[in-house]
Structures are given as C-alpha cells and as structure tokens.
Image (cartoon, rainbow, N blue to C red):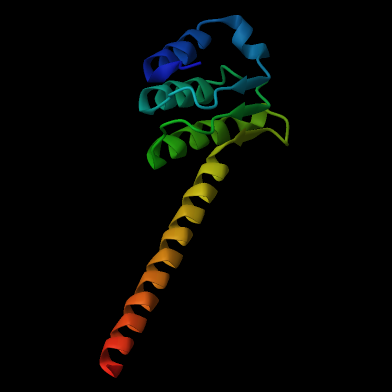
Length: 127
C-alpha cells in the first residue's frame, strides 16, 4: 500500500485529534512512501504524547532523510516515559546497515579494479 508522504502526514495529524490514538500499540508503515512531511507529523504526535501506548513502530523502506530519522527518534525519546521499557522503532538500523554493506561492497569493487589495473600495468612493463 502506497500511503505516500502527504497521506502519512494526514494520518498522524488525524491521530492527534482522536482519543483512540492513545490505545494504539503497534504501527506498521514499512515501504509506504513516507518522507519529510510524514516524519514531522509523526514526531509532533509523539512529542505531544498522543501515542502513549505505542510499543513498536516499523518504518523500514521509506524515504526518510537523516534529519527525518533524527526528528522521529527525538519525538520517540521525548515521550519514552509513557512507554514500556522495551518499546522500539524498527527499520532505521536495517537501512543504515544495508547502506553500510553497499558502501563496503563498492569499496571492495574499487580495490579489485585497482588491483586489476596494477596487474595490467605490470604486464605491460614486462613486455
């Protein structure tokens, strides 16, 4: 389901207006096209304490920038007193880990390419 950034923002803005939001325990919004606007609305809802029972939120695969993630995490931490100790945001670490793995793969490929160039140059110098 592609909720999108505007839809995600509207969802969290509406949640802050509904008493039922205080009972929400889990939110799964993986790969739904959320971005900066949704991140701001989510962080605001968290900071306002509108989601006190929220134990877990899954956000992997969205279009969050580093500052979006920081904003969401800050909102989560500001409202942490009302949550169970093991409450968590899921998805941010996985994306960072995947990005790190991709960077490592690129570095390894660059090293292989450099080795191949060096070998070719050595062969040319021998001829």
